[in-house]
Amino acid sequence: MALADVLLGLLIRCGRRGTDGVEPEVGGTASEVGGRHERIVPVKAIRIHEDGGPDVLRYEDVTDPVPRDGEVLVRLAAASLNHLDVWVRMGLPSVPKPRILGADGAGVVEALGPGVDGLSVGDRVVLNPGLEHGPVISVVGEHCDGTHCELIAIAAKQVFALDDGVSFEEAAAFPLVFETAYRMLVTKAAAQEGEWVLIWGIGGGVATAAFEICRALGARTIVTSGSDEKLERAREWGADVAVNHHTGDVVAAVTEATGKGVQVVVETVGEATWARSLAAVAPAGRVAVCGATSGPNPPAALHRFWWKQLTVYGSTMGSREDFLGAYELVRSGRARVHIDRVFPLAETRAAHERLEAGDQLGKIVLSIP
Image (tube, rainbow, N blue to C red; front, top):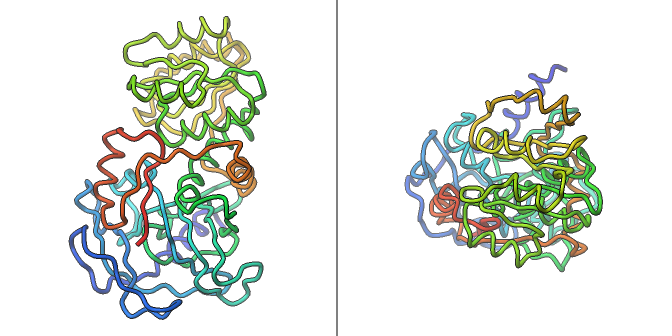
């Protein structure tokens, strides 16, 4: 089957919720619920019906999902925000609508569809948002309805038992960013103990996850931010070097700390940082790229590639193995999950505004209901 057909089938399969009982404004009261999966009112969710700013987010009733063959119905206790949610909301890319946003989530098994074993009703679980289709990995909340809702029916292979020592909020905060950073640092760049790693924009989800994974690996970190307050917090967390990328000289700070440059760069910013990334990386170094929040078309500076004999890795999301590797670091306590603030699901609009303003230090979490 062609990849396009697989993705089309995914969109059709996942977009099965109805549009009944729409309430046009964010900020309503969470639904009252009955016993286990004995709903007396529809499920509440955050959906978009058009592309735009935070004002297009609707806290509304949606059809109560029912698990199909091989699916698990999960009553979500927490979800989190990623920049992906902002981009999807803005139409970058524009997705079929209405669409429930949200990639990450954790909660309790509510019901099991036919053919599901290894899980029981009442189990605490965390969801892996990466949907694998051969070499292509799509994402819950972008390519199908997501986790910013009370109940979700999702394939059992995406559902994992949650250790009692990990809270629902922590479990909802780590999956997308940690498996993305794990794939960049471990699977692709193979960062090693004692190596220097440059991480742009500490406080963002992937950057903060990358920092924690580096700590767990024993790698040394140089982190940047435009906020001196965030840099001070990063030093408290254990960053070896922290530099303001607006007022300081990042390349000079790298040279002073390392002598010849970092072995690995975690590049998520693009145009605003690309030239400095190539200047800061050591000969035979590795640059792992998973995004370009400031723009995707920086000056190529190709001479840096052959002069320094660099390797550049493109990386998107993560595989099941990446998720499990990241989860093991979290559940073992080797990597900490940093939560910025928790908002009720009904206040998702305010959560989006905080994320877009760049005020967060760590992940923004939604409590459900």
